[in-house]
Image (tube, rainbow, N blue to C red; front, side, top):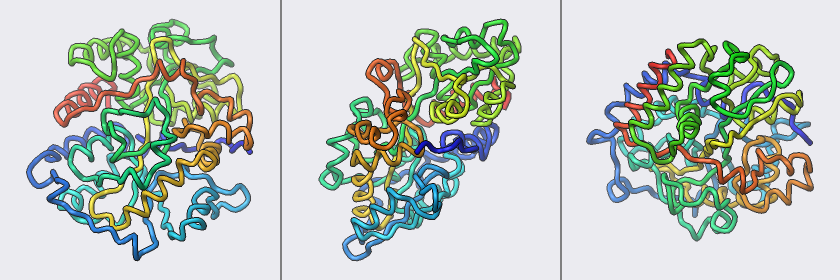
Length: 394
C-alpha cells in the first residue's frame, strides 16, 4: 500500500534541526576533530563483542526511516521479522535528527574510546566519512554479511569513504536534483534554467546542504563533484553568487521547501528524490528532474561505533536488510533508492507502481549520470562549507 505523504522526511531532517548557520558553527566548534586524543586506531581502541551471550542490539536511526504497520504504528514489520528470526531483541531509537547534532552527542565518548550505548547508527556519507577518518567505527566481518556482497547495487560499490564495504553499509540512498510544480510553471530541465530563467525569478529555492547544491552546480559547470579543485569549486560558487545577487533564489532550505512546492508558493527548486515521490503521490504535476549534466547520489549508512558490544548482532541485522524481500518492504515505506539488488522484483508483489518508479529503482542511464560528492579532509570541509555558508547568508 502506498504510504501517505509524511510532513517530515528523513533527508529533510539533515538540516532541519540545527539549520545552516548552526551547522557552520558546529563545524567551527569541531576544529579539534583531528587533534591528538580525538583520533583513534583499531589497535588502540579495542571493542569487546558480547553478542555470543547477549541477544540484544541498540539501533539508532532517523525518524520515519523504518516501515511501520498502517494499522498499528507500534509494529515495524521488517524489524519485527528480524527479531523473530534471530532472537535478538532490538532497542530501536529515532534519536538522529541531524548529522552534526548527533556528532555532538557522541564525540566526547568516541574521542575518548568510550561506549555510546549504541551498537548500530545510520549517518549520511559525509559524516560517515568524518567518523571513519577519526577511527571511530569498527570494521565489519564480510563473512557475517554475505547478503551485502551478493546484493549491494553495483553503483554503490567502491565508494571513496569505504571502498571494500567493511565499515559503512548503505541503509537507503537518494538523489538530489531539480523539481518543479507544473501547475505554476512550465517544465524545467537544467540547472542553468533554474538559476537564470526570468519567469522563475524569486520563485526558486536551493538546498542549504552544501554537497547537494554545489554538487549539481559543479556538474552543470562541467566539473566532476567526485574529484574537483578549489578553482572549480569557486567557479561553481560564483554561478550561485550571481543567482543570489539577482534575486533568482528566494531562500536556501532544508526540507521545508516541500510544502511550498506543493502549494505553488515556489515554482522550482533543488530537491531530494524521496520528498518529490511523496509530493507527487498527492499532486502529479510535481515532477523530479534529473538534469542531463547529472544528479547527486547520497547514502545514509549503517555503522558500528567503537566500543559497541554487540557487533555480530548488528551484522546479523545488516545482513537481514540485504534480503530483497525485506529491502522491498522497507523501500515501500521510506520511498528512497533501495540499495539492494533483487528488491525491485519483490516490490512488484507489494506495489507495482513503486516498483516502476526510477527514483526508487533507478535504471543504469540515471545511475550513470549520478555522482557522489568528493570525500573532504578536515581542512577542505571547513574551507568549502565556510565559503558556501557566506554565499547563502547563513
